[in-house]
Every structure is written in structure tokens, then in C-alpha cells.
Image (cartoon, rainbow, N blue to C red; front, top):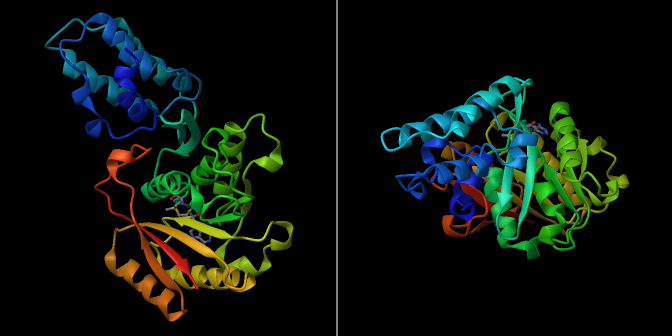
Length: 316
Ligand SMILES: C[S@@+](CC[C@H](N)C(=O)[O-])C[C@H]1O[C@@H](n2cnc3c(N)ncnc32)[C@H](O)[C@@H]1O
């Protein structure tokens, strides 16, 4: 029975928009046992009980389910109780959890994230579509990270670094250094790393440090392994930061004698902004190659595949 609801479960746990969920998998009429099983697979899932998703999301989900069922059958008590339980429990009003379930192989990432897009002066306290797209790309192209020491710029909540170190996935990446210019993001990343690797020795987990792009020269690089691969997701949205980001890339590429690759994932919000960044990459003699996006049917993450995300490989 739970398998029947595995897609709904995956969508619920990562707070995929309620109106875009796989409601077609809910076949009516739904008897009490089925209602109970769906609630157990979503609101009653052990991950949600321990680290709850946003109360308002759970409420929207249950209300939508009630709406769907109301003309067909009597509602199970668990539906009502799941409406009230979380409201009483959510103490932290600004943050909640999301759980990214990977169905094959069986693994998950739990992240504490901001419930608003901008919080504490940064956009990095929640996970963006581009990070999910890049994570999907890496799941499909694990050879890109095998044995590589990786630095992520503007890493936000830490999703990608955590993914690459999950033992179930066998990426076999080298050292992972997650960086962000925002101190709040670095603290959140550290909390998220600790949450996902409670028993792993610290040296085998991603490291998290504050790094502003305009301070790349002052960063203590000698304390870390030589970088082979740079990753970044959704960092091309503010052209006032382009020079700092490009100077940071120049520093990283030059210090490695250009034996470096960068994978950059960007949500296409404003074509002109992206185009401007590409032009500046070309002016600095970088070679840009588009990477194929992962199609919806083989995607490991619940994400909006209609939102255009461009992934490029940058070399010099
Ligand atoms: C839209 S968020 C993306 C976060 C994450 N990569 C994701 O896709 O979910 C942009 C991130 O870039 C970081 N950032 C922006 N400007 C920066 C700068 N000048 N130096 C370092 N980090 C910066 C922000 O703090 C934020 O975490």
C-alpha cells in the first residue's frame, strides 16, 4: 500500500507544490485503510514526525486531500488529527525541514531551510531549483566527481555537498568544501551536515567555510586539498556580483594552472543577465560548453521541470 503512494510521499516530504502533486495516483473512492496509509506515508512519516515540514504546507496538503475525498467517503480521523498536530508543534516560525528522498538507491537528505526565499539578508537559506537540477545532473554523471576535490561557491543550505558524501550513493568524491559569503548560510550548512552525518567522522563529511567572492585571495586555501572541480548553483542573478565572481574564478583557475573545471547551474529568469555573464566568461578566455539537462522521467528529485535551468561546463 505504501508503495502506491511513494511519489506522493516523496513530493510531500520535500514540500513540492500541493497543486502540482501526483493527485492522479489517489484513486477514488478511497476506503479508510487507504486514507490511513496515505496519511502514514506523508504527515505520519517518521522523518516528518521527527523533523516536520512547514505547518502551513502540511495544512494545505491535508485540506486538498479532504476536498478530494469529501464527496466520496467518510474522512478518517487521522486526517483531522494531522491538521492540528503540527500547528501546535511548530515553534520555529522562520525555519522548517525538507526531506529529499532518493528512491533508487534508497537514501535521503534532510535539510533545515528557511520558509521564506529571503531571510537574514540572504537568498541562500533555502534550496533553489538550480541546486536540485545540478544534483540531478551529478547523479546521472557521477564520473564527473569521482576522486575530485570539490569546492562549491554560494552553497546555501549545503544540499549538493551532502549528496556527494552520502555513503549509499557511492560517489567516491574527494574533499568537499562548501562555501558561502553569508555567515548564516555557513551556520545552516554546518547544522545540515551534522544532521545528515551524525556518526561519520568529521574529516569524511563536507567542510563548510565562509568565503565571499571578493575575498577569495585571503582564504586559507593551503589548509584544503587542491581543487579539481568547482560547483555553483543559482549564483548568476545579480550583475553587481559578476566581477567578484569572475575574479574568484580567475584566482581558482590560475592557482591550478587552469587544470580545473566548473559546473554552473542557473535558473533562466532573465536571459540578458545570463547572456551578460557568458560574454564576460568569453572575454576572460573561458570555454563554455552546455551540459544536457536531466529529463523528468529519470530525475531523482521532485522539481519543476518546466522551470528552465541551464547547466554549463566552464574550462580554460
Ligand atoms: C540563490 S542562492 C543559491 C543557493 C544554493 N546554491 C542553491 O542553489 O540552493 C545564492 C547564494 O549565493 C551566495 N552569494 C551571493 N553573493 C555572494 C558573494 N559575493 N560571495 C559569496 N557568496 C555569495 C548567497 O549567500 C546565497 O547563498
